[in-house]
Length: 179
Length: 179
Image (cartoon, rainbow over all chains, first blue to last red; front, side):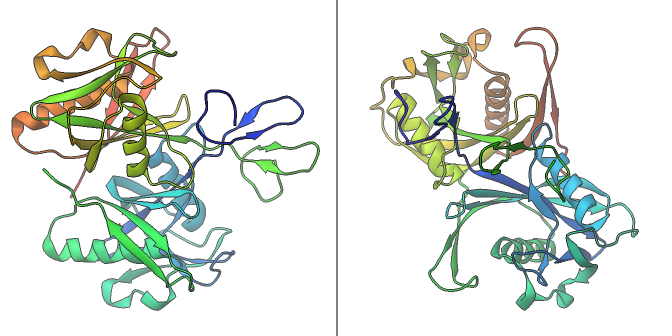
């Protein structure tokens, strides 16, 4: 633990530089076209073969929205206009914070990028609920279709805590917004 | 650049491990007591002597809200209940993402932590606007008092781009939310 610090850190045994390990941001979006959303089928682990929203690690030098646009282009060769932050999910067990924006798909000229095996649009009734890659994707899509039925989108902050079972064993807790 | 990657990375010349550099999250809050907000006078660089909202680097293993509560306790010895995400600011020139929540101060038993020289409550007319530490603090407080006058708080996503002048030389661009 460096002097004055409150946490143990990784310190280089050669030069003494402290390598801080902080949570990483995963940024992405819900690409929307009329009543459908675009999903990508993962061609890589983890969860290869399962469907997800385009998202990935935010890079230095970009904004969260620019990262979401870049990931959508990389994974689905698709262009979106970002419309607003929709969900923020804390995943403290893996030190990640997911930021998912709503995005308007600008055209229908999309195709799988190198990390996807398939890219397709799904109406609510067509969503492969049992074949979604991650809890954040399932929770975000449920909120999205629910809000759309009610005619108003509002952003949410939630925590996802994993149980000891498989990927389906988790607990989601929403931050209750107060005025 | 590691094979299959799209960006150059720091690779350890000893063991080959890739050290990814990703943006860091700074998490904090606006601690609110009736018509006042709590500010901390910084006792450390950068911007020592200037006033700020309690905020700091998010740590592994915690949520963004837990980080905001922890920073408020560390910097102001103050306890808050987090009420909702208020502003997300991208600072791409320094690879940071600021998350500032609204927080209800639970009692008036606060005092400067080791990184603060002074902690005090300010009504809107008392805010030391010319002595605020960072653009994100000024922008967030302006939104806060504006929303309060209008009787409704709504969260915002913005980018801050620095000019070539001093700290006051910056440009803030808000993401326009669309329904």
